[in-house]
Length: 140
Image (cartoon, rainbow, N blue to C red; front, top):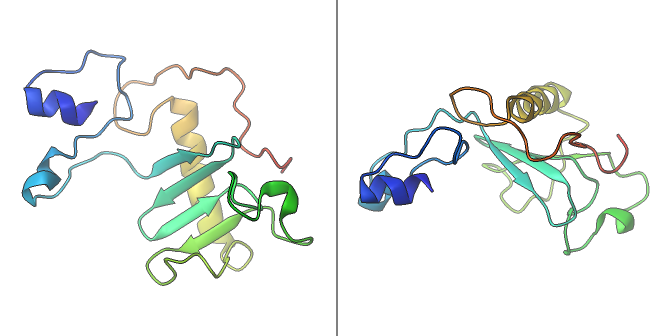
């Protein structure tokens, strides 16, 4: 939404597209400027993930979607979540969820803050579409 508005040279009305960030600068090789701390993902299965810099936090044991392993087919004894260093491990092969609790806590706090504010960018708090948001579908 922000990219389309930026290309057209129009303003987005207050209360619309709160999470949208224009990627128009990237189309000409420039840096994208954003007030967003990280990026919230939500899978088809309803599981949240949060990406910030090199880190990706998944609030699920499995993929959260259609790819294997699904949440109910995750190996027994799997951690309740997943954390990956996308810079060192872009294939997401080494789950650091249990070995990096400080990073998990930091990312989870930022995700919760963004959800509670109803937006991931700077600006006035917004109302979420759903009143009771369940972060951990796995029951955590």
